[in-house]
Amino acid sequence: ENLIYWGSHGQKQPRLIIPFDERRTIYLQSILNYGSTTLGRNEFEELVGKNMFSYPKPTELLKKILGTSSKKDSVIMDFFAGSSTTADAVMQLNAEDGGYRNFIMVQLPEKTYHTNKDGKEVPTKGGKAAYDAGFKSIDEISRERIRRAAKKIKEDNELTLPEDFDGSFKHYRVVKPTKQTLE
Image (cartoon, rainbow, N blue to C red; front, side, top):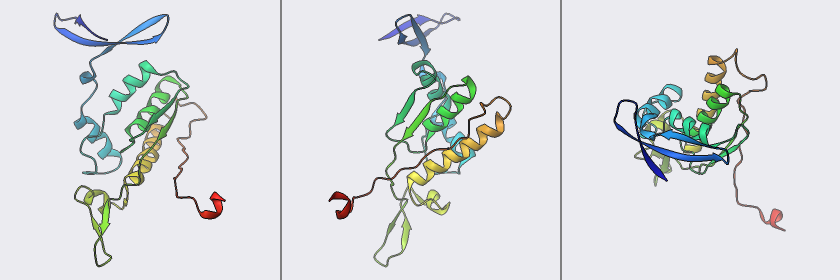
């Protein structure tokens, strides 16, 4: 339920009330105060490269949502991982608050190219930058962001990270089963 509260300077500020547990309620400022897609794009481009994603979410927004709505040992699932901002935000939040949240990112292996009649690979309209950078599918970009984000978090927080933070992850693929597997 959305409620309006008066801000400290007399202006109205929308706030969202999220029940955290039976004992308390957390007031969350409007999501507009936690970054924009421009910020999200800049974060992504610093880690991976330019012009691959137009509107990635900012990690600050996801950290605010996850920090107020998840426990420190939650499993966070993103069915449309794209640039894997959610995984980056989960790792950053764990580094900040000592949490042990895990993430599951799901991303179809959408190709950044198509094959023309001559058998030559041609970048898709929106996939040229990614293809030129060596990424043949969106899920490859997602995995690379997770690797680079984990490395950056280690470098930026080496003195405060828990000893068991290694930034590793497991990659699973869904494939068509063979006849032998089905039998």
